[in-house]
Amino acid sequence: MIKSLRAAAVVLAVAAGSTAPALAITGNWQVDNAHPFVGLVVFYDSAGNFSHRCTGSLISPTKLLTAGHCTAGTASARVYFQQDAGANFDPATGVDPVSGYPETCAPGTLGTLCATASRVYDDDFVGLTIPNTRDVGVVMLDQAILMPEYGQLPLPGTLDALDTARGTQGTEFTISGYGLTLRVQANSALSNISFRSRLMAKSTLVNLGSALNGGYNLQTQGNGSGRGGTCSGDSGGPIFLGGPGSNLIVAVTSFGLNSLCRGTDFNYRVDRQEVLDWINTIN
Image (cartoon, rainbow, N blue to C red):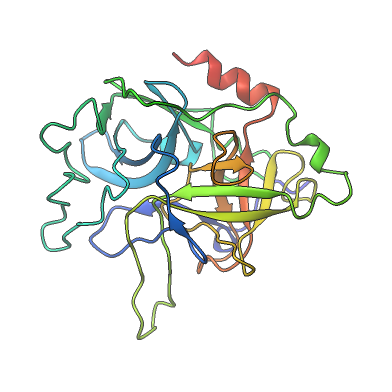
């Protein structure tokens, strides 16, 4: 069993706090208006300073599912549910004047399209110990956000049959997030592309049982053939089993092996009994 990976080889899909562009769903993406319960999550340290941003999904009016490496070491959070939550971000001021991202909820949006969170949890996440990273987190909102529907948790073992069954490599998943759309080399003449909007794309199964997965992670492919992948800022975002109309969350975006977000994606499975039990203990 591989206990850990060298830090240089693993890229957590977190967007750190800075005025530099951060990126989103890559490849053949489309605007995601199908999952209004997927939000842009901003995390703060104990002094109230902006730390980083991720993505998360409401599974009830007050419980938001995300990644453990997003919540670990943070003290509070704020979640924006506008589709274009950070699209008007001004690098000069460090704020989106329309939504208030990442400092406040815009007037009239608290409890409707924006919420604060004073309780954040991780399942004893201590780093990317492969394959069981324990990379699941929960954010409990201070204000209930009422939606016509929420993300649905799977039954235990929902993905197990895909591990050995023939003909499952084309199994379709839908990914959603507010992360990077294009990251370029540090010395490139081109610029990173960041929309800070909720985007989604099709991704397909690679496998569940390799040394990097081990039954704990879901490895998906987002390159070519109408597919898309994940990048910085998409961490904690949902992996839906099925097409764009699916609300069934079987994993959350966890890590990748390429800093330029060009390869396959690894997602922490939430269809395992112990993960579901942990999520359900938090109220």
